[in-house]
Image (cartoon, chains in turn orange, yellow):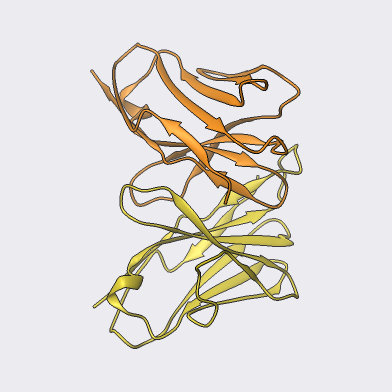
Length: 110
Length: 118
């Protein structure tokens, strides 16, 4: 599988702060870049996704920034809340397959 | 919306027995389903891709005879772990492609199955 590198591995943010998670991919043929949120013992749930023809997508407190030339994309969680505490996975791929990043465990402290 | 139901949510079985996990798309037809395995605190590793009515495509290193996948209909795919051993204990997650997502890239995940082999 093509690699998708994700950082940081873990992140602690104070309530109200901004959480930033970064990912980098290798395959220039990838055209779908989703972010998933996973709570313990549950399957991943799609948060937000972007296609390479736009540089930014915002949905509520969640924003994806996409840099096609650098093959990097990031998730920004504004006004982070304790309920956002979960593991976040970026992914990259296409119609038939996505490859997941290694995950970031986010803890939002009051 | 798109809902994928995975059953059972957890199962404990004895070493040497087989376990079947079901993945159903409840409100859409899924021509393609994916099976993932996730170890504690690790990422999701794709095991296989199954298309309705055809043989599954397994990722490198995944034993086809151990992890039997059947995608007999547009709403159901099953993963059978045959002759299970303790090292097969893991969290197995399915996802289905389809649903009401505005993009054709609509992957919806099941809630996962925690398999413990004793």
